[in-house]
Image (cartoon, rainbow, N blue to C red; front, side, top):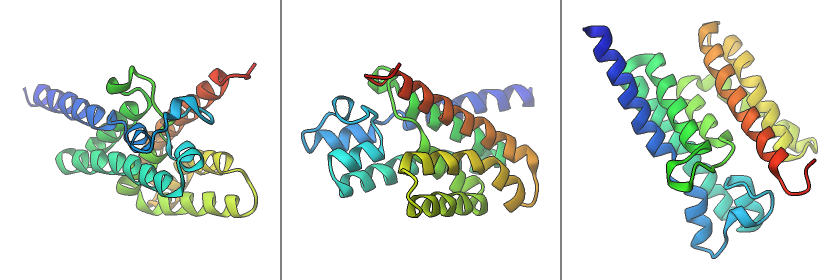
Length: 194
């Protein structure tokens, strides 16, 4: 019975976090300024596209909003179920960000949502991944490539910086893979892509 209750709780947690992750922060911010992010730039409803086509303040607001979706979901999950609960919440929020129920399942790449989740679940490795991203950007790597490197490094950094609970790095490996696949899919679907 206890296992069944835990499973129901996990499904409810996942569902709540998915719905929260589905809130269209980027589209809401951009629409207030008369811009549809699905029609400009790389057509991604995310922080970088908002930064480029709506302005730096809008981009920062979207980045913080998307990060908060992940952080709140991971924090809620962690309160009710430890690290495993946090991982369930983070996964729900990220899938909501990438496939939002309010936006016909067409969402962003999930980078900022992953960053917010990771900041709650593995703060040391997240700080290291953000430092790597910032360093690469300062060295002239395009922001999308620098962010991809930070996301890809997160699982390894989690294993190293968080005291070697490698099962945790597997969670971030799966989430980073989801972000990578989503980015590749969006890039492939971009007009002009082969």
